[in-house]
Image 1 (cartoon, rainbow, N blue to C red):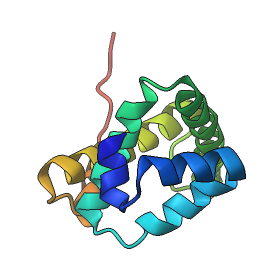
Image 2 (tube, one colour):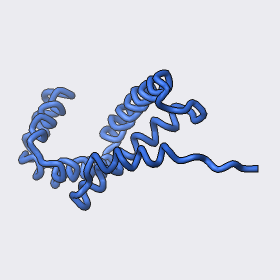
Image 3 (cartoon, rainbow, N blue to C red):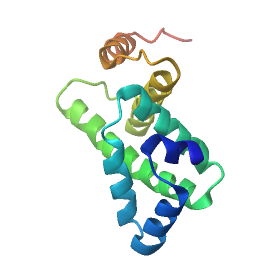
Length: 138
């Protein structure tokens, strides 16, 4: 967590006072301070917070809640794509939503580790993958 705090220029004491006094609203204040980071530093911060969630049950529960909510939103997006005729309907919407989220998480990991992840490359690659035909089995 010290690396996260250093990245955003805060001390542990300040964060402790803010979070214990202000509750969940303090998280928004910390995130506002992060907005000025470049892509690689922001992605690195995300990865650091993910790792911290493995040691902090409260943070892990917060991520689990957020992940569940994002899955529902992404599932709605998938259904919208289907209605618009953009996406096939033969794969469960939740499977597609989770894959979309995994690609986003991988994008952040690549950006944090290598600094050269370009959103256009991710978009182009996903288009290529979704254009693949599944081989016949049987």
